[in-house]
Image (cartoon, rainbow, N blue to C red; front, side):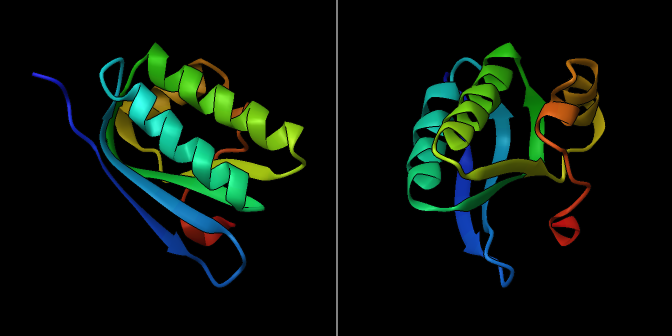
Length: 110
């Protein structure tokens, strides 16, 4: 059985589009997460992925984050991640993704 994720968008007062993902970002959800993120990055100037509801991220999920960051930079836009906690934050830190993405503790840190 494939993993399922829940995604939603919220426009923040400071111009950022917060895009929330809940569940697991792994090989079974990575394509869906990337496609959603790609569309958001294409239309927004500043995008933050709220990962406070993400309980697991695999190497496929890390690749999604790198691809979205690369796309945003190429288009002169901003992309970052906020709210990662527990094992997800540990994976982001050990892989140095926290520095590449300028990881934020919460959406309030933007």
